Length: 214
Image 1 (cartoon, rainbow, N blue to C red):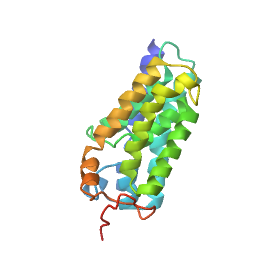
Image 2: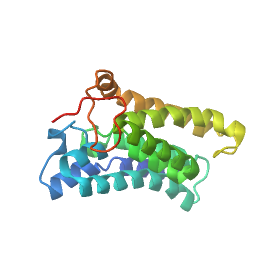
Image 3: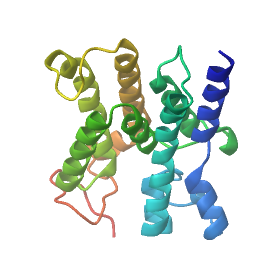
Image 4: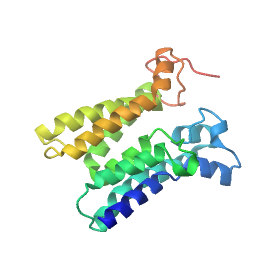
C-alpha cells in the first residue's frame, strides 16, 4: 500500500515536469507560453523553438508516460493496475504542479502510457496519427482522430482479440476518459478547423483545405 502511494505521487510528479517550458527557458531563454499557441507541448515547441527542441520535448513527454507505467511493474507493486499510474502522469502533464497547473494537451504522455501498457495498441494509434497527419497536415485533427479510434478500439478490439486480448475494465474506462479528455482539450482547435483556420504543418496533403498562414 505504501509503495503504491509513493509510486502514484511519483507518477504525478513525473508527468508534471514541463519539458517544453524548461527547455525553452534554459536553452533558448524564451518562455514558450508567450509564443505561438502558448501551449507548452510538442507542437508549439516545434513551431517556436525548432525541430531539435520539438523532438526532445516529444521524447521526454512520451517517456514520462511510459516510465510511470513501468515503474510499478519493475518494482512489483500489487493491487493497482499499472495504467492507473500512467493516468496520474497524464494528469500531471496536463495540470503540472511545477508550472502553475497549466500544462499540455496530454497526447504525447498518453501515447507513452500506452506504449508501456499496451504497445501494439499504441503502435496502431501512432499509425492512425501518422496517416491522418499526412492527409490533413494538422497535428490537432490527428490527435482527435486518434482519440476517437482509440476509444472505439478499446470497446471493440477485445471482443475480436485484435491487439487487445480480453476486456480489462480499468483499461477501457481510462482509455474512454483520456480519449474524451484529449478531444475536450482540443476544443479551440476544432473551432478553427471548422472555420478552416487551423495551424498546419508544412507537410502533407491538407485535404480539408485549411487556409495556410503566411
